[in-house]
Image (cartoon, rainbow, N blue to C red; front, side, top):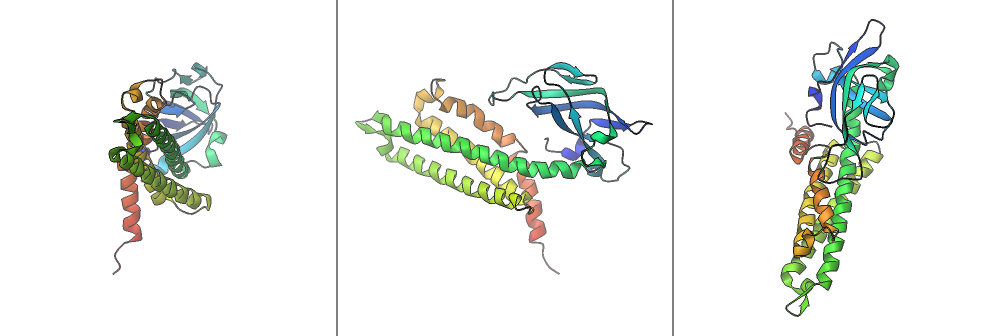
Length: 266
């Protein structure tokens, strides 16, 4: 999901028979090669003045695999990523793909923006939760290593410089986790949570990068070795800074929500 959703260029053109022909390109499909169902947000001509009201979600069924998996649908191959090797991330190319009107999510065109925004709120809580998981593991690795590694005749955990780093890491882990749980509970209760989800995603992902880097530094030279788990976490953490919208995008959403809530009276 890109930062400027309303600017999507992939287009579905309505045919005389009421069905659609889709042309365009999608990037960053999670499990794009192994999935058999894709929700694709595309532009349709609904005659609306506001760009986001001309977006429609199509449910696209396809077989798993790479190459031209179905007439008009090509999955070129896996994108070679820095981290997140456990899922295949791909591109998807529509070239004259014929979609049925019945493939529209909800049956009504022009409602795609609201579908995807609802999904993005869940996604931002999801990314916050993943960031918490990586942070917790990075902290666990650091505090275990700091009690085993000795310098100047004692474990490095007993040096104030390291002890303070461990305390800072624990504070960040706890704060991020609490904010993530709060956003998740609001979403689960069916309440609006765009501001809270954005806050949780921003804090958790930024703290994740900081905690993981602190853990890496505590490991010293061993942190650079693939033999130690922290090396993998150093490659996983950066994705969470950009997944489901960067921190800058989150701050835009948060500030807009706050200005609505605290709008001056009179």
